[in-house]
Each structure stands twice: as structure tokens, then as C-alpha cells.
Length: 457
Image 1 (spheres, rainbow, N blue to C red):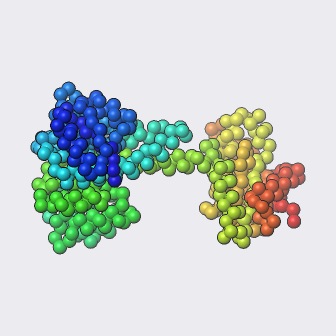
Image 2: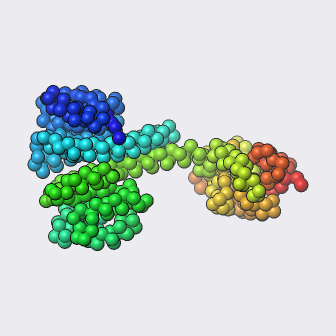
Image 3: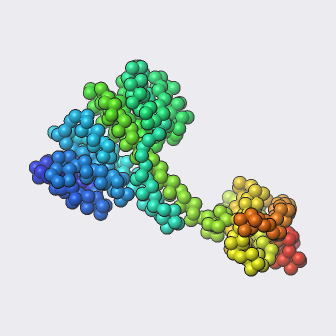
């Protein structure tokens, strides 16, 4: 997978070296010689990943990274810090600033390419979520990017797969100050535990006794329940080739032994933040999709949803022989409720009306606000007689209990008239059935209201 890589370094020879290495692997590159220029490029969306030198005059790499990760516009960009500093405290400082990884100079080509490819793949998924999540702002749901960026990465549920008891206990002790840790020494049980435990992150030792830890990572990547759970490999110095393979097939990060407890805590927090960042965006996407087909006042489906699904029921040849019934409900004298008690009371009545209707319909039924005080209920696999029974039950429940208005300070009686129709062989589309239900509804109104009428025979 190709990508646009931003190289940030104040030394031109360093920039050219990385440009040459990346160009040979078919990556596009662009460069910035200082922090402010790098931030400006990132804010314009001109790059997919940042290779950031730490030691720069003025604004150093740590400050640049912190600025990028605290900005909702750039927080999703993977940042790899490239530095001659190789002490654990240096890595910890970078991870605390939000860096996704470290590369130590002189840069190892295998580590460079595997890390860039891995992070670019993760960003591609995040970008798709970001573009869709931004649509949720159009529905008044706030800014999902700001909410996602504010995630702390704490209080996670972590699975540690490690059969070295001492090592497992030391890592668990470091993590339990901020998270809940489950230790599993048996890799076969670990697969089941991971699939059923609802974990936020899994740490896997690559050197498990009589078991290939990398294969365990591969299995966790392939299972539906664990496919999106962040994985961190625990590796020895001789495992670098296996680490590169793990990153290639989707493992998120790794730690080399001996594991520095502060780096462990920081890397775990980084992965948890990234996971929850994606979850917030995914939730915003789902919410925007629901808002697009949901009536904001009643919570019922809207006319768009009704038209799409009802159209499919009539156009799908596989469903043409199955019965379908339609109920058209209209609250009696709703205008007088608004005129007498105000539109706020009318809204309260509509919300309560929708709740009662939902209580007396099946999960397979489509319940949608048709317009104003009218509601349509589509009953798959229901004939005329069954539809009339359901309609009468709804009518009785609406009439049986007065509706609360003015924040439950008083109640008023409410009734409903219902027209019932079923699909006929001669129908050219759903409009024909709904037209007959509409005619039946008007007959119910003309006959005194608070009644159910069916289509003419």
C-alpha cells in the first residue's frame, strides 16, 4: 500500500536519505525542515504518515507530536519519531507526547518499511471512519473528532498471554494501576478467553512454550470477535523478522524484552486511545445513519426509510407471493390538542403515541411517521383479518389510558382512527395499498372516529 510520507528533519542529508529509501518502496514523500511547517502540511491533509526527527532547533519533535495529537484535525495521523536517542526514557517521552512508534538512527530498512506499511493500513481504516463520522455533525450530534481526541486510554480490559510467570506478574503489576489485567498462560485457552472476554487489548508473547505466538496473533486477527482488538507482541532481540511479519498481517505494535514497564504502560495507552478513537468515530457513523432514517421527534422511522423498505417489499419477486398489510393511523382531533394546550403538549402526545404503538407491534414490522400526526405500520406476512385484530388492539390501548401533557402535570384523553389495507395482485406498487388504507382511514373518521375500518372488499 503506497502513501504520502512527510519527513520532518532540519538536516537536508537526513531528509534525502529517507526520501531515497522510501522512493525505492514506491512511497511518495514530502519534506519539512521545521516544526511549524510540518504542522501546516498536516493540517492541510497533505500526508498520510509523519516521520519526525526529535532534535530540531526551536520547536522540537516532542512538541510537534504533542501539537498534532491534540488537534482534532491531525490527531489521526500516525507519527513515527526518528531519533538518535535510544534510552527508554526518550521513547517514553515520545509516547507520552502521542507518538505511534520510534525508529532509532541509523534507521533499519526492514523496521522502517514494516512500520510505515502497518501504520498506513491503520490510517486508511481511520480515514474512512473520519469522513463518514463528520456527517454526524450535520445532524447536530456535536464534533466526533473532538470527542475522539479527548480519549485518555485508561481503564481498559487487557488480556496478557504469557507463560513466564515472573514476567507476567511484573507486567500485570505495571498495568493494573490504570487497567484491569487477565493473565492466561495457555495459548489455546487464550483464544477462547479473548473471543469471549470483551478485551480492549491483547498482549502476546511470541516465545510461548510449545506454541507459536505469532500464529496466535494471526488467529486473533482472523476471528470476527477479536479482529479489531489491538495486539501487541512481546519479542526477544532474535524475533525481529517475526515482528516484521506480524506487523505485515495486522499486529498493531511490539515491545522488545527486557520490557521497560514505563514503555509498556505508554504503548498500551497509545493503542487503547487509538482503538477508542475509532470506536467513537464508528459510533458517530452509526448514529448519523440512524438519524438519516429516524424521525427526530418520535424516534420512529421516517418517510425515507418507509419508502425504501416498502418499495423493496413490492419490487422483490421473492416476496411477491407473501401477504403484506398496511395500517394508516391518525390521531383524532390532533389540531385541537395543539390549539388548546399548545404545540409542546402536541409533541408530548406524539411521543407517547409512538411509544404505545411500538409496544404493540412486532420486531419485523415497520413503524414510521408518515407526516404530521399520521403513522404507518407495515405488517409483513399478515392478512386482512390479522391486521384488523392488531389495529383494534392498538386503538384500544391508545384510548385506555389518558396521555400526560405539560410535563405530566395533567392528562387528556386521546383516540386514534385506523385504516387497514392489504397488498393485492393488481397493485403496481406500495402507493396502491396505502391509498386504500387512506380511503379506509377517512371512512373511519367520517363514521365517528376512534375506530378501525378496512379496505372495501
